[in-house]
Length: 307
Image (cartoon, rainbow, N blue to C red; front, side, top):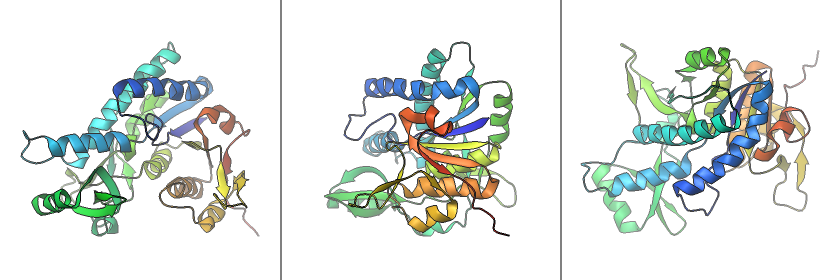
């Protein structure tokens, strides 16, 4: 079976941890161990989040006096793919002796007319006091939004249309390689309508929606979205909270999960199942093997057709 595994955004850096390299090296061992068992029996593609790493690089770039302007987000996103990809590659290589592991910096095509470009919503970078935030708006034309006790930059989050290296990923899978790609949603690019030339854009792509797009593009049999909870919960955070073990795309969307947490994961699973008729699941990282074998997590299956 061909499986796309979407790792949660905090798989390498847990909430509150310092973004040190040694911390991420330690955490990556747990990640690789959790998914290695799947690689013994299945073709595996691994995607990952990048938010903490992108925030760190964005802060460093903005503060660097040697630069005329901070690096654009597409290039910073490529850096995170390389950094996280090499950590995953090395660790998977060690826990899967004899297995080829390949990391690709991949690009995600988005529409130049995506409505998201007119309504930036995705928080990126550090928290600023109001005065420095206003200075950055004036100097670089950035959008800022008030967030907790300060201000943060907000950027567009366009919908992924295609993973441009999907054909290469399929070829690598056919050679038996485990492929790490589309990290953090991939590098967002738009194509010139006349020439097809690619141009990076100052935006981010949701990692879970990109994983669903990737799973379609590589003709995966199963999309596995891993997070820090064992399954989806109905009425989460209330006295009526209960696990959801089996659900359809229609039911997922009807539950209206929050955009800042389970919403993108639910939408990604729903899109993949609707568009392919195959299965997806959402659950905890350490239960990856059990989820694929139906012993844990929330299974997302196609809606039943009523004659």
